[in-house]
Length: 363
Image (cartoon, rainbow, N blue to C red; front, side):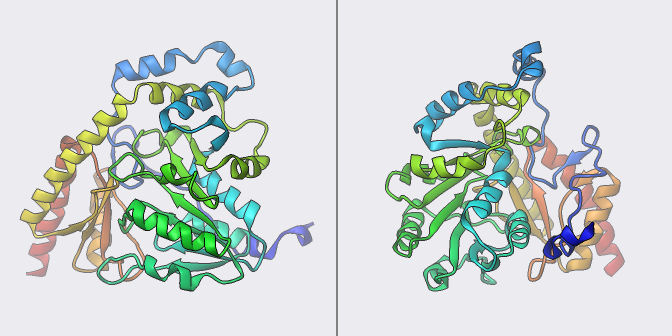
């Protein structure tokens, strides 16, 4: 029976994510999720629209497409709902690549790009960062070959935060179009500080934009994203759709959040205040940080990899969840999801405890 199993999938290592966290009693700063709880009023209003028929009937995404069209100022025909940006990435690989093709993508970035590259047996060509944390986007055109299936730039990007202006995005789109290559802009961190490339979809037939409700909207649990492009591209990509694009509960909650956009705006304002406080306190502690202007995350540079892992474990024991274990040259970093000031204050309390203990041990 196993003779049907694909060799490349057998060799692929996958793990469940987000396991082992106390998401109710802990402080989750490891997945760039919303940190603070939604107010009871918001929860009551959002869930009030989940009627019996929402649960018992196959969902109709029409109302959400209409709301999104108004919110994004694009035609409904230019939008395709996906199960988070992750499904959009899969659609790109499924519809545009064949084994042996090349994909040009920023690295380090969202790990699922590598995963899908392995699943669809493509060659992953990384757009790298310099030691000064500059994304070498200038090299993209020289990396394009006859085997290039598409180029993708998460903008803004993480875990190394980078942001390219619309002028630069336009220039990259133009160069990709010259070589007849599709260009994806992953805007997972849209609405947190940068401009969207959606305004350019009428100018470049090869441009596709990913967005999600997981970050600024704070709805990682509903697993909803969308692709935005010209109608011809969307018609093609949407041929991969399942029976329906999403589930009924997700569609209802997403529509509520779009129609109550002040919830997003207020939270983004809270994040910016939290970032200002965090940076000030880290400077006092002598810890260098990077990022947070265009995303909801920042990197902390520790003295070495052992310190990063030690701090990670110390915090985890106290139900403060952060990220570490990045590849060189960023293996000495901790990544912290930004939150309102009170959340950052709680993180700093325990981080400072670890820092003082660690410094005493090394004296």
